[in-house]
Image 1 (cartoon, rainbow, N blue to C red):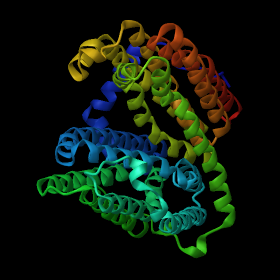
Image 2 (image 1 turned 30 degrees about the vertical axis):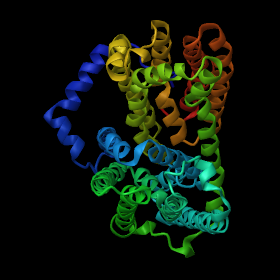
Image 3 (image 1 turned 45 degrees about the vertical axis):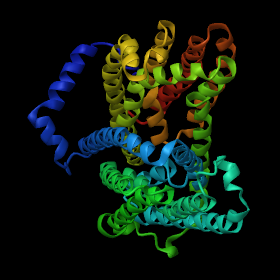
Image 4 (image 1 turned 135 degrees about the horizontal axis):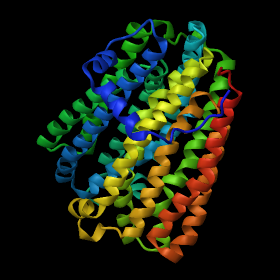
Length: 476
C-alpha cells in the first residue's frame, strides 16, 4: 500500500471540480435525496446536510444574540444582566458533571453498534447512559436541596441591595431545577449524531432558539425580573427538548427507548472510561483556548485582553467553521470502521481535509488582510491589533484549519489517547511559552506561543498517528 500523504497539489483544479459538482443542480439533488444503494455516498450526504444546518443554526444563534443583547441589558440593567451571564458561565461548568456520558463517548459506541447492525447493543448503551445520567441528576438534586439555603448567594454574586435575596434565590433555584431535569436528556444530540442525522438535532435547536427569542421579547415587554427571564429562556426550550425526546424514542429510533432492564454495568464502565478521556480532553483544551485572557491580564493588564480576544474571534473564524463542517464525520467514520470500510475513511479524510484547507486558507487570509478595518468598525479604534499579532494569529488559524480533521478522525476511530496527548502538550506549550513570550513581545508573543505550540506539539503527533492508522489498516 502506498504511504498516506496529505493533498498538497492541484488545489485550484480540485476546488473548481468540487464547486462545480456540489453546486450543480444534480449535486444539490444528490445532497437532498437519500441513497440506500450507495452507503458511502449516503454518509457524505448526511454529513453535508448536518454541516449545512449547523451553519444555519449558528448563524441564527448569532443573530438572536445581537437582537437579544440590547433587549436584555435595557430591561434588566447592568447588575442583573451580569448575574445572568455569571449563571450562564456556571452552567457550562455544571455540564461537565455528566462525566462525558452524553458526548462523543456515546456517539462512538452507538456508531459502532450501527456499523455492526447491532440494535441490542445500541439499546443497552443508550439505556445505560440515560439511567446513569438520571442517577447523577438525582444526586445533584438531593445535594442542591440540602445545601441550597447554606450557600450565601448574595456573596457568591456580590449583588447590591437593588436585587432582593428572594429574587436571587428563586432565580438560582429555577436554574438548578431545570438543569437537573434536562441533564438525562442531554444525550439526545449524541443519539442524532450517532445515527448520522445531526441535522435533526440542529432543527430542534433552531426551534428552541426561536421560542426563547419570542419569550424574551414577551418578558421584556412586561418588564419581568430575573426569574421570568429564566422561564422565558429555559422552560419553553425545555419543552422542545421533551418533544425531541418523544421524537427520538417513540417516532425515530424506538429500538433505543431506554428501558431500565436494558442497563448493563459493562456498558456503563465503557462509557465512563471513554467519557473520562473526552472530559480530560476538554479540560486540556482550556489551556489552548481559554488561558490567554488570564496570561494577558496578569502580564500585560486587562485593557490588552480586549485587543487580543477581538482579534482572535475575527481571525480564528475559519477554524471554528472548519470544526463545525467536519464534526459530522465522527459518527460515519465510527460506523465505517465497524464495517472495516477503511477505503471510505481514507477518502473522506482526504476530501474533508482538502475542502477545509481550500476554503479555510483564503478566508483566513482575507480576514487577516482586512482585520484592522473590520475591528475598527466592530469594536472601535482602541481594539485594533498590530500587524505582528494579526500575522501570528493567522498562522495559528491556518495550522488549526489543516489539522482539524485529524481530531475528528481520531475521535471517530477512538484513538483518544494520542488525541489527548497532542492537546495536553499543546496546552502546556501555550501556557508556558505564552507567559515567557508575553513578557518579551506582548500580545504578539502570546499568539506566537499558540502557533509554535501547535506546530511543534499538536501537529506532528496527530499527523504521525494518522499515517500510522492508515498504514496499519486494511486498505488495498
